[in-house]
Image (cartoon, rainbow, N blue to C red):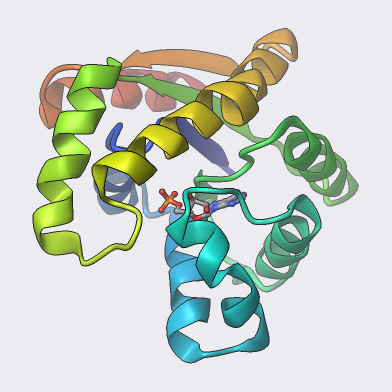
Length: 190
Ligand code: AMP
């Protein structure tokens, strides 16, 4: 199985790159952000609990995320070729729990670190905010999300770097250029 953690700041292009990878490699795609927004829309108990957190640019507590991921992994189809984890793990505690639960299932994942300059991600997110309808695509919340990314999620990249399961991608240029770097890596490791 080809399991990929797509890590990168909000607006770095994780969703766009995931779509291209799914198309070419036939992997499953889990965007935890999309899954959580779906929970909010459905009006579920979880949705009600997390609505304000997400709107304020804060992270959903680790134990809720780990539970969601465990349930997702245990319901993968038998013929699954692999998964793109888009937006998870977002803290070192999530990464540690994830590695444990993957190990127990004899599964492995590599992390792709999609780096984009801050000015560029702010520009992309403000632009997306014009049509996305997302409560967190406004300047103030974008700044907060970037701050949370630096303090909570960047250390996840270091965690995978130390485990020798890390690849850096320069996502500053075009969608095609970014995918070509990802494609080279995936061909090597698949
Ligand atoms: P995204 O669509 O990936 O930008 O995620 C939107 C929001 O969902 C984030 O700002 C967090 O509030 C929440 N979220 C998504 N994934 C996670 C995660 N792995 N851990 C905690 N919160 C998450």
